[in-house]
Image 1 (cartoon, rainbow, N blue to C red):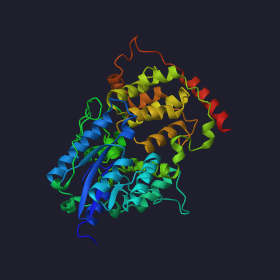
Image 2: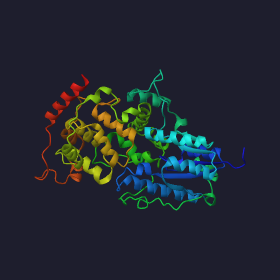
Image 3: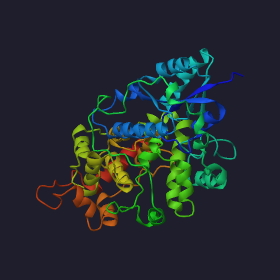
Image 4: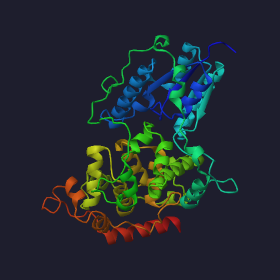
Length: 437
């Protein structure tokens, strides 16, 4: 073996040093590891020029670079297509391998397969590791080896399999001396800044992830009330890997089974999209692709702008536009309203959320939208139609959340409901029954 072996670690959905599975493996196996991040123009070119997620990533990358420099290394940052950049960087640095953590989404898998083919032609391996989930792919399946499509039995087996080994952190910093020294790196002049990337600055302020014991212990009792500050707001950190799923699961264990179940739902959806990639565009239950949606563009616009006349729906949509966040209970209500009250295709809503949600990730977004529409794995039955007025009475009884985002609520300027709940429900049931008969 050569005396000095070099590898590249490609940061993606794992923007942290501590407890990073792929980075740990690279540092353990190689003498010098070059940390790389690519602002992927194949993704960036599709985004609006004002996007909080790009700002979040830029700030997280800057934070990561600062940490690496404190350790005597630095982050090699590029802007462009990873398909061409990674093979070129591997050649430039004389790397024997490129390490990364696994992404389970169909486009990411196709991209990685393309890169791997090019690397193999150069005699370089692409090695990927499980990092963003506790269990992946077929690690938690039925006894006959087929994937679960119902959450409850999946979660039971998940919990039966999970032990301290799977939650143990990877001691990455223990091998920090194997990070390539700053003097050895061929750094570019690219700065992790939204303006440099062609985006407008946003109100996004990056802060390291944290959640209190009180939040976790009270989560089950308080999480459904959008006016309460009772959720972790860690979705974006899990999405971009600025926080460790293993650390969070370990923290939740024993404090909140309800919160732990939310993490298991993440694994469930990632498992489903890996086994059933067609669900990105098609209903998990094929019969539901026959639904004749109304898809009224004017109705869709009123829903987007929070002008439906149902205050809980409108509050959620306005919160989303203003902040990039929406409370989970409200997400269920607004999604059900779009699909069932307005009979607008769940894919329209999924794509709108994809444009605006700070914590957007494909697997969970598709899974949750299909759940709301009744067409997904372990979905709410099609005849379950949320009454947004009753949901508001139950979960925002003093209208604190509603009045925060819909200040004109109760005045003459607030619109009347755009549809009658009972009539919309009856219409929905008739259309669904016709499709799935």
